Length: 109
Image 1 (cartoon, rainbow, N blue to C red):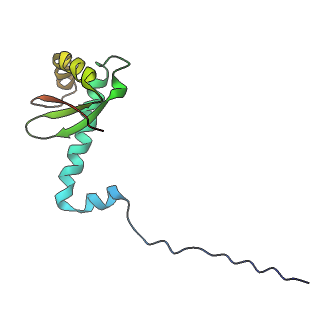
Image 2 (image 1 turned 180 degrees about the vertical axis):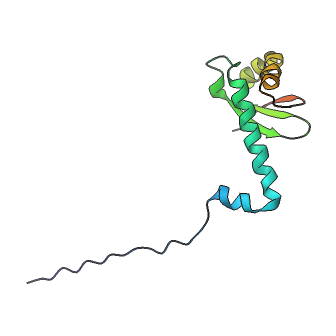
Image 3 (image 1 turned 90 degrees about the vertical axis):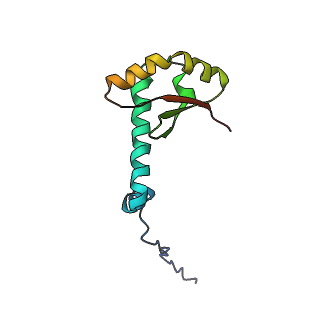
C-alpha cells in the first residue's frame, strides 16, 4: 500500500514594484515618463490624419524641447509622413499639443 504525499510548494516571490511604479518614484526618471506619455498623446492626435494603412507603420519617438520624432518603418512611410507634415502639425495644434517641429526617422531593425 502506497501513501501519496502532496506538497503545496509556493515559490517565494519578492515584493518588486512594476516598472512604471518604480520609475514614478525615481525623481530623475519622472520627466522621462512624462515625455513618453506626451509622445504617445502626440501619436494619438495625428493618427486621424494618417491614411489607414500607414498608421500601423508609424511609432512615437522621442519628444524634447526641439520637437517630436516619428519613427517610420521604412523609407516609403518616411516620405509619406514628410508629405503630411503640415497636416500633422495642424492635428497637434488642434489638440493643444505644443510641438515645435516634427522629425521623421526610419526606424532601424
